[in-house]
Amino acid sequence: MEATAPHGETHERDLIRRVQNGEHERFYELVRPYERRVYAAAFAILRNEADAEEVAQEAILKAFANLRQFRAEARFSTWLIQIAVNEARMRRRKDRSSLMEPISEPENEEEAYTPRDFADWREIPSEALERKEVRQLLLEALASLGEKYREVFVLRDVQHQSIQQVSELLGISTASVKTRLLRARLMLRDLLAPKVAGGGFSREPFSKGSKPWS
Amino acid sequence: MVVNCEQVWPEISNFVEDDVTPEVRAAMEEHFRICPRCASVLQGTRNVVGLYGDARLFSPPLGFSWRLHRKLAGAIPGKRGTFFGWVVAVAAMGLVAGSFSLASSHGGAHNAVRSQLAQPGRHIPSALVVLVAEHSRVFHVRGCRFIQDDEGHLREMPAAEAIREGYAPCVRCLKEYVTEAAAKFVRRQVLALALR
Image 1 (cartoon, helix red, strand yellow):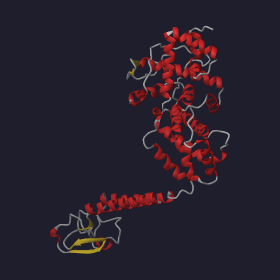
Image 2 (cartoon, each protein chain N blue to C red; image 1 turned 45 degrees about the vertical axis):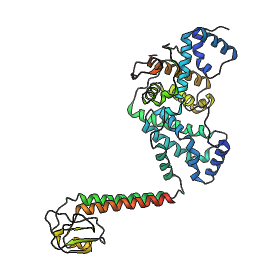
Image 3 (cartoon, helix red, strand yellow; image 1 turned 135 degrees about the horizontal axis):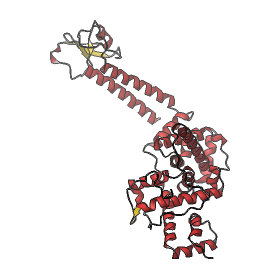
Image 4 (cartoon, rainbow over the protein chains, first blue to last red; image 1 turned 120 degrees about the vertical axis):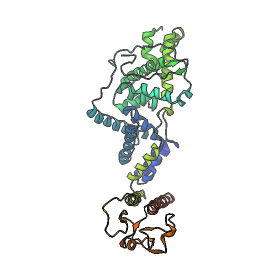
């Protein structure tokens, strides 16, 4: 389910050509449909609203500055998100070099993942997302994943990029994408299922070191 | 084809993606019918995909789009108003700073000031017409509600002249005047920008 520009790809290509030919103001129209996705990509990597906003702005400015280098064979959205992912990774490296924050990486990726919790998780109505505590719970669970799993999960399940696109964006094989995606989904399920009681979410927060797989 | 739990788990994600062969799919569906634990894992995985796929989860902070477009406006060449916007901001800051300076001027006393407790006027437009009373020690802008009835005959003169004569600015009315003038100026420029 790849989101496209409101008037379709032809309109988007036309917009890109116009901006490349000097109609710079058209760039607003070009990026507007993707603003949220750029922010989400940055947020998934940085896990901080302020940093994500700053990186999203930088990524979009960079896209504008480098639009002449954009080749029509790629999707504009994929190219834009690629820039955001790269910018966010650079920011993360920079921050990490000063903070030395330990990053939790679960066990070997190649090992088969075994679900740890078999709690019955009945279908959650989408209205649950209206509740702030539910959104917070989901974000905390996502933030507790290791980076490589979080990146793949967000690009596939949040950004709705195809497996092939995720592979190209991250520079890893499609097999690795599938493996990481499986683990990410199961880890999130293991984290969230125990919090669900009778179709609702408990407010108990996640704590470091209490992950079901550790 | 029959599959067990250990064979099902590694394929659950592909099953959700509909990325398994028809034969594997049929075997897994059969397993889910008889294994409540795997059925629970499948349902949970689908819930994860559904919940995180909802666009509402990753809403940018309030004002994100506005701030982004403001930043873009500063970077896109040919976009009018960028330099002008800076001029407006600097001018407004100057006026506001002037009002603060006026309101909080606690510097050394000026010998020529008629009141030993008053401070000389600074950053006040020299051509501004102000009112002074013969026996008063401060000057006001017209309409100031702090002009006392017993101040006697009022004279009009430029602010520069009033300062030269040793009158000190009325902190209340001149502070209001400068602040309001700054606000009016900013409002006019914002309106002008919006109408372009």
